[in-house]
Image (cartoon, rainbow, N blue to C red):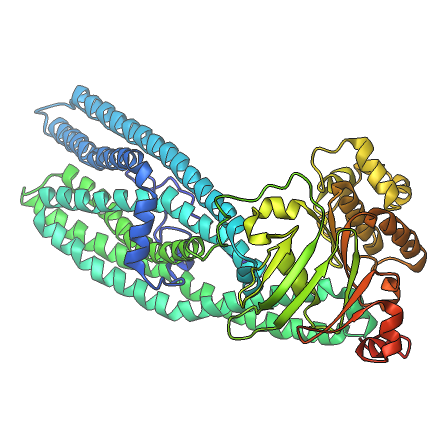
Length: 628
C-alpha cells in the first residue's frame, strides 16, 4: 500500500524574511486533515518527553535560537517603517521648500534592518542544524531500540502480527516522530513567538487598526474549518482507494503468470477501472475543495487590507500615525494570520505524532522472551541425546495442541516425524529450538539438561536447520552459505557447497560464488535455493540436525544426490526429519507418527507398514493420489 507523506520542508517567504510555510503550513491543505488519533495523548507525550530527557539542554538551546530568530525578524518592519516615515517627511520638505531627505538616517535604518535579518537567518540556520542533529539521533535511538526489541520478542508475537505492521513502526511511525521533532517542534515556538510579538507591535502602532485586523481571524479560521470539514472525507476516501489501487496492482503483478494462465486480464482491467474511477472522483473533489482555500483566503485578506488602508489613511490624515507606521502595520498583518494557521496545523501534526509515538512505545512495551538463566549450562561436548518428557503445549493457554508427548532420541539416531498437516510436527521442532517454551507442563532435555538451562544462543548453536521455506538474503552466494558459520574460510564454503552438490550449478553462473542473489531470490531456481540452504547447514557442522522436508524443492536426481550427502552428514549426529513424502524416510532409525498432537504410532518403517495402521494409510495414500 502506498503512503503519502506530508512535505515539511521550509520555504523562504513573507515580508519578514522568516521561515514561512505558505498559508497552510506543512504540505498545504492536505496536511490539515486529521490523522490517526492516539488513545492516550497525554500519557504518550509524557513518555516522549521522558524519552527526550537526555536532549533537553540541546532542545532548550534550539528553542532559544528559534525565539531569537523570530524576534529579530519581527523588529525589521518597524525599522523599515521609520525609514519610510523619514523618507516621506524629506520628500514633503523638499516639496514645501523647507527641508531635505536625511539619507544618513535612512541608510542607518536600512543597515540595521539588514543586520537584523542576517542575524535572524543565522539563528534560524543554527537552530535548524542543531534540531536536525537531535532528531536524527533520536530516530537512530528509536530504530536501534526497536531492532533490539525485535530480537527479544517471542515468536508468538510475530505469529499474530503481520510483518508489514512491524515494518510500519520501524519506518513510518518513527519517520513521523522524527519529522515533527525536526521541524514542527521549533515551528510551534516560532509561530507562538511571531503571533505574540506581531500582536504587541501592532498594538504599539494603532489599537484601532489592530482590532480591525483581529476581526479577520475568526473569519479566516471559520473558512479553514469549513473547507477542511468538506474536503476531509474526500481525502480519506482518496487515501483508501489509493491503497486499494496499489493493492490490486501489486496482486496482479505478483500473480501475473496465474492471471494470464486463467485469462483474467479482462476482469483485472475492469476491477482496476472501477477502483481508478472512484479514486479519480474523490481526488478531484478533495483537490478542488482544498484549492478554493487560497483564493478565498486571499479575498478575505484583501478586504482586510482595504479596511486597514482606509482606516490607516484616515488616522494618518488626522496625524495619529505616520505613513511608515501604515507600511509596517500592513507587513505585520500579512505576517499575523500565517503563524495562526501554522499553530492549528502543528496541533494536528502533534496528534498524528502522538499516535505514531504511541504505536512505537506499545511495541517497545510488548512482552519479551523469558530471560535466559543467570547460571547457564555450558557443555564441553554435545552428545546429542534428546528427551521429551510428558510435554504439553499450546500456542494459546486455552488450546493445547500437544498432549503428553514423550520420546527420547539417542545420540546419532535419525528420527523421522510424520503425520498429516496440523499434527504438530513443526511445533515439536519449534519447542526443541526454544522458539516457544513448553507452557502446559513437561520438559525437554538435551544431554540430560533442561533446554531452559541453556542460553538460547548456545542452544541454537548446537542445531542446524534446513527448512522447506528457503531463506536467502540479498548478497553474494559465498556470503549466503557463510551465514552458517561466519568464521569459515572460502575453501570451507566451497567444500560445503560440493558436499551439498551445489558447487556445479554455482560455477555455471556468470560470477560464480560472487553472484549476487537479488531481493526476491528470483535469479536462481527454487531447487538451487534449497541446495544453498543445505550447504549452509553443512558448513555450520552442528551436532543435531533438523530437516523440515529439506529436499521437497529439488528434482528426483538431485534429491538422490542430496540424500547421499545427508546420510554422510547425519553420521554421528542426532537428526530429526519432518517428512511429507514418506518414501524419503524408510531408512530412518525410528519413525514417530503424529496426529492431533499425540504420537499414535512409532517404530521402523517395515514394522509400521506391517501393522496396517495409521502410518500404513498415510504411506499408501501417496501412491493412490490422495492428499496426506
